Each structure stands twice: as C-alpha cells, then as structure tokens.
Amino acid sequence: MLLSIVVPVYREEKNISEFLRRLRPILAGITEDYEIIFALDPSPDRTEEAVLEQRGQDQRIKLLKFSRRFGQPMATLAGMQYSSGDAVVVMDVDLQDPPELVVDMVAKWREGYDVVLPQRRQRTGEPWLKRLIAGTGYRIINRIADVKIPPNTGDFRLMARRVVNEVVRLRETHGFLRGMVAVVGFKQVLLPFDRPPRFAGQTNYNRFLGSLRIGFNGIFCFSTFALTLSTQLGFALAFGSIFIALIYLVMKLAGFPFPVGNPTVVILILFMGGVQLISVGILGEYIGRIYEEVRARPRFIVDRAEGFKS
Image 1 (cartoon, rainbow, N blue to C red):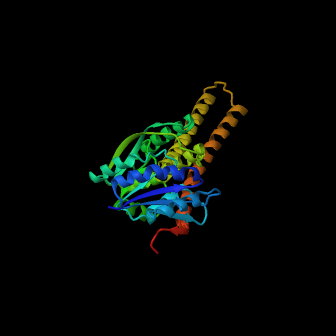
Image 2 (spheres, rainbow, N blue to C red):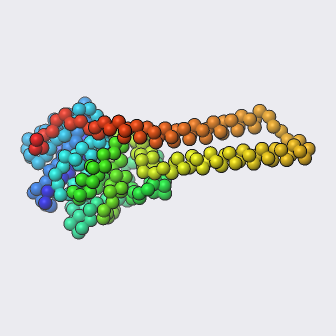
C-alpha cells in the first residue's frame, strides 16, 4: 500500500522541518511505502531550499515547483495528479491539519470509505469575521448547490485512488476541491477534530477576500440558482411596478391628492439601478467562469519535478 501526502506550500520555510518531524514517524507507523509531495508556488523565501534539504535525507520527499504562482487550489490538484498512492491525503504544512489524524483517516479508508473528511469542531486562531463568512457560506451553498458540501471541512482529506483519478479528470479551472470531490461522490465519512493554530509564521491566505472567493466558487460553479433568483427578482419588480401604477391611477381617478415628486423618482431609480447592476454582476460571474473554461489554459505549469519518474 502506497500512501501519498500532498502538501501545497508557499512562503512556509519555517514550518517544513517541524511538519516533517511530526509527520514521518506517523507515516512510518502506518507504512514504509509512502511519498510526501510538496507542491511549491515559487516563494521569495527559502521554502524550496528547505524542502530539498529534507529530500537529501529522505528520497520519499518529492518536490513540484511551478513556473509561476498558480495558487493553492492548482498546486493541490497538481500534487494529486502527480501522486501515485493507493490513497492520497491533502493537508497544509502549518500544522493546523494535525498529522496525528492521518492514522484515523487511513483506518477509515481501510474500513471501506473512499473519502475521509476531517470536520472542524473548533477553529482556534481564526478571527470571528472569517468564521462568520465560512458558516454563512456553507449554509448558502448547501441550500442552493447541486451537491452537498459538509460544513467546516477544508481541503484536508483522504481520497482513494479512484476518487483522485476522477477529480483530476474533471479538468475544471476553478480548483474548488471541496465541490469537485462532492461532484465525484463515492462513499464518504466525517472525522471530527479540533483545529489548532498555526505552528509558525503568518497565513498567506487573505482571510476575507479568500473566503469570499471560495464562497463564490461554491455558489456559481455548482449552482445556477443565482441566475434563477435574478430572473425571479426582475419579474417581481415588474409586477410590483404595475401594481403601484394601478394604485396611482385609482387614487388619481378617485380625486385623492398624493405626492409624486423627486424623492419617489430618486428612490425608484436607485433601487432599479441597483437591481440591474446586481443582475449584470451575476451574469458576469457566470460568463467569467465560462471564459476560463473555454480558454482551456493549463491549470499549472511545472518548472521542476524532483523525485518523479520521467
């Protein structure tokens, strides 16, 4: 049994050594046949050197370096594509994904589960705004999306080889792993855990904009509900305007005085303008994603691959 560990990294030189110090004994207790793949976006620090130093001590440590920064989602998918394991674990290097949990994840896989999803009971060290956005986003996505994504789960997960093969085969450009795994399906199980804070350094992830970007991918890439909502809102406003016009007509014919002036006009114009811009924005989100898919550019370009067969 070959076990693959995929670790996307960027500016993480302070975490490499401690991550491996904790992970390798755990993997050795599971199997001696494993590989640790660091998928590296080119970093201004010594992350690459730190990985290569560790590789000099253990050839089961491998490196994928990209030609430019493609982002964590693409790095993760690249590591999955290059992996060879019968099971693949995706995890972060900052130790917020506890290496010790890999033992339980592999045990669940051996029980017959194809996807093992660690689910956060606590999110230590995360600001309230990020927790609010994440909680709200999961609720919205699961109400409107075509697939269900378990709340409080990240990219930290174990996937059987057949799941990895199907996810890679999707060839979608957004890289929203949580949604892609949900689309693929197969037998899944949740594994609750308490998420610790980072071991060292600052996150390279924009907590506010990054959370919104992930949420938008979940909404627009896995549901057409926003388009339907925009259409329904347009019809509701059209019927509402006709109803108001009828009220004004009845009041006029009945001789009731009523104020129709600048405030009414301004409010209606601003309201209608806002609705139109929101609708155009929703269309733009879908069209932009269609454009990304149609261009069919490579999701990543590998500059250097250490430890892989040619």
